[in-house]
Length: 307
Image (cartoon, rainbow, N blue to C red):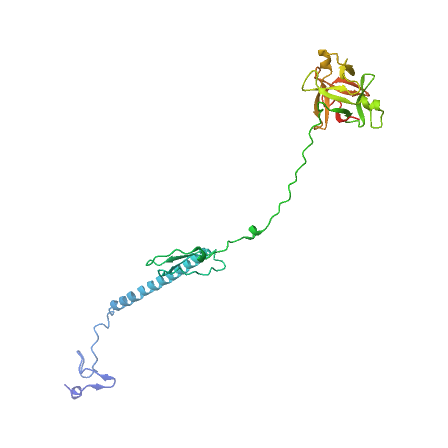
């Protein structure tokens, strides 16, 4: 071995081994090549797997926390929106000392809206509260209950007057409803319709007065007896109205009986023959006749006081 090689082999750039396999004395000594220089370095899979296994659970946990916070906030919003404004009855437990009454609480202004129930503690007996010491709550009055409503007075229609009738036993005068001042009278024993008033002569006024009798031929009808000729009745003969004496015959009783028919809503009446039910007393000018017609087509009469 040469003298230079026997030295410690200190060279510029660091220590080198004193010899290298295959090297000559004249050339520089080179370090032995690393066995992995020309081959790919094996990957340290253990360290990478360990780092990935540590980070992934943390990410999953953070995402789960975010989702939980969002769900909690959503539930809180829904509950707050659906919460009603009705007051909740408060419940208190008050310890009770035997022999002492329950304490009374002042009622708030709107205590009728929030009921309060006071329950005694389980370890004692509750003495009855006297009615004078119980809190009284004034009844709630609404504006609609305190408003006084006055109903307008009910309008009552006056009752219609009763229909005019010939009252049995009365003394009347028959005035034509369509010819005021004209009354039924007899003259020369014939039935007529003339103007009769308080200024007329006594004889004319007496001729227009008749007493109402029960129908000679029908109890439900009427017969008209002359005031100044007692025993004489208005009757029809040959379908003319005349004043004849009652002879007691059945024909006379039938001819002298007239049934009153209410017309014009009871304000007037028509006279219908009892033995000729389709014929009514009708004024033909100044003469009275028995004409076949209806009640509406007959002469309307209004009973008046005798003059």
